[in-house]
Image (cartoon, rainbow, N blue to C red):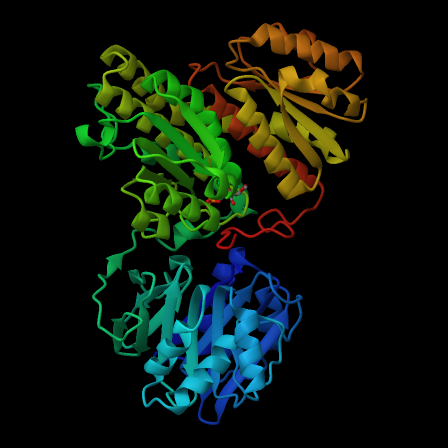
Length: 607
Ligand code: F6R
């Protein structure tokens, strides 16, 4: 399950605070939402199928209760219905829980609980937590002890917050392999899956670690391990303002985030490359490059494509073999060795498959670096070195600014490793650095061509399929462009290496299949032009992405989307930005739910 969790305990009415937090967490799942609040008469439970707005409509009278929990669900076990919406309670109705994760030994636990008389009201695995706590409470005088004992029986992953009628001003929160943090306020405290849900109340947070159990009251937070021994966690100040996490007047988060790329890229290189000297500072020293034999990049979805896009550049810079692996494959079939460097690429830092791949690599003695956007995320606690992308919060499910900043940070990594290994000259490092310095301006110029992209989008919006082609460094950009289109517009889209067309995919195309051909910055440009000619011969409309100075492509393509002339190593980023806009405008023309595409969620914290 990848769900959003929020809890509040303090002096204010909990319901509006929980609802606001749930709205900010909706990107984590929006199949159903619910909340439980303690008031004088006991615990009030409210749940609704669909997004948080549906739950909000059901709130008729505000409970004065100042302690409560909320949850927004992305279903994995049990259908999307009200019974399966969280919170779930025990048989007495006095213990309510919200949960994000998967209980692997659920079948066994449920059978045992039922044989001892517990009645399950939902099909979820999560409900077992409430019943287990109920059982453990019997022989326990501390609520936290009962939770700890119950959680020890669970195999799997969880972030959970527990509410108990007999402790009306206490929340117990625990995590194991699912994210959870505490927002520390004055005479009030919050707990949530991520910082955006607490930021309007406090910018001070404590990231819980695996195995932590926190007892939270309005005036205190005490954290222990699963055996009850106290642990110390520091309070971190969040630098993101709430304003940054909101839409700032754009119709969709996705468009806002696309437009934030010039500043995100500036941030990503800030203080890391010096315009005067060829020095790359991303926190790596001599020891980080010594003895390196091979590099493997791992990630999922868009983050995997960022790895593919960086591959040739890293190989050229370092002279080392570079593999790029899908994390869900690598975790089972990868062959990490000591002497390898495994670089995990993950916006959220919480993707279950990527975390598992990295744990596997560490076990084999490989070095692990992380390229991530989220400070304090799980990957940052596993990796030996962390390189933040500094893109700011990405709320839209479709990744945009995270992708381009990942590409920038991977280039910085390549340059730094090449410096440390002495593989390329200082002059080459300086040249690449100056390209990265120009990149933000070039992305801004690319964004200013949005009107042409919007027009081209209208030609795709009425079609059922579109194909993207590119060669070399543009091939991963074709894959990423197609992913963006399919996930937000539901137009069937695939990316192909241009040379592969005649080995099969050509059979699919006709005059109703637009082809998006990326030729800007392609050293095998003429070959790709021949591929375009083959496509034209079959009557398909061709939209080409080409440099301003390109005068040949317009003889072949029906529409040319212009990219500012740019150095070879940064041109793919500009094409990626144009393809993000293209997907966005197609989805808009088709009236799709752009920020929250069907069946998808932002953070995939289960396998
Ligand atoms: C697509 C998209 C996903 C993510 C993937 C990995 O637009 O966003 O494909 O890239 O789920 O997520 P992270 O980068 O958080 O590991």
